[in-house]
Image 1 (cartoon, rainbow, N blue to C red):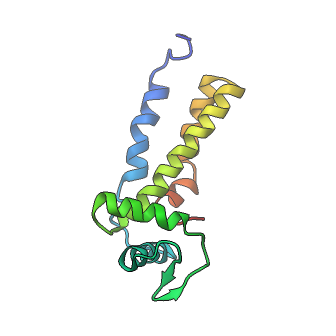
Image 2: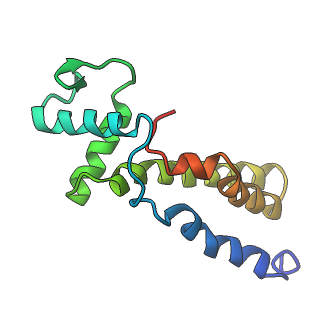
Length: 138
């Protein structure tokens, strides 16, 4: 086990750079594509008090299931603000959870080293980090 962690830089540097790679300028970019639609549907759920039937500008919006809207609404309520950072944070956390899942599966199937590098490098590879900045459900 000690031989596995002999070169700490291979393990520490990616973990140190991961938050910087995923969280830098997360709230600075304006909404792109359909990010604004997701946030607006969650905002309308909050303002109308109707958490079952999603609406967009007062019209029924059934293009996506409401689970992601509920998650967004939860983050909006916890942070107390409706902004780009809060809308994108659930997607980044889901991406980190995906990397942890890959780590866990690879660790059991192959080795700890393979699991670590599989999980961490998944979060660095494109298009995942780009999509991590996107507050989308797809």
